Length: 384
Image (cartoon, rainbow, N blue to C red; front, side, top):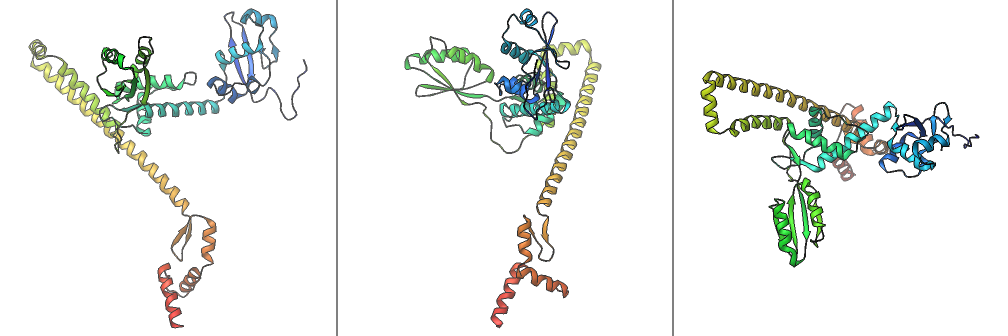
């Protein structure tokens, strides 16, 4: 088979091979461009000619063995090449290099952090969480980011893990349900059945604050035939706009201590008295000692974490200061003034103020500021 290709393009180089194994344990491969194959899976690219480097289905792409029509018909039950290529693109294993994999993981990680920042709040204060605090929390939970799963699904899994050890929760949603006057009582009854309490009525609308998990069930019930109503999202995530944010390390400690207190308070007084009679005073003392030791250990861990965070902040500040110094690198040592651009710096060298300061410095005198130089000029004119 003759391969027609444009001048300057060498096929079968700089490619990503997607491998697909059928139920018959037969392997098929296609040769794609690395970035375009990822864009296809994300739904960005839709043109197959842009994705594929060679419009062929191979049994072995490195050797150039092309799959026959009979093999494709047996395995895929069709001869339509486009359809077969699409199934391989969607379900096949994509081989990517280390650098591309790292870039993908970084991209997915940033999207997950952004999703958590947008959709979550501090459990007690209701404030928005900072990016640094979320990244710190994810590192503590040891959540592993994967490129073969969608960002939203991974972010929701990450939030579940974070809830176990940090004071984080999903931000509530503000929703409006518009209805006809006749169906007002029906809609109100439906909201009461879903245990929604914060209901505010404005004309023919119910404005409700709900948990994001209830949104799907509420939307399905509103779209039922018996309800002639519409559901609209007013605010996707309600957050309190307060400056500053509690340290997540302290929050973690507070939560763990509260867990210990809750576990003690959950038991009734009668049960505690019975246990005390059974175990005796010695065991109670031992338990108290163990709890105190655990609390002390947790406090030490938190202090270490706080010190590490402070060090990180100091390092960032140093970097920012270094950037500021770089921006002010055009300095005049005679006039004690700095400039942002080289052009301004050169123009300053031609001014009378600068030339006069050079003369003063050569004669061993103190240089003048701009205001002092203006006064000097006025005096000179007066004497003339």
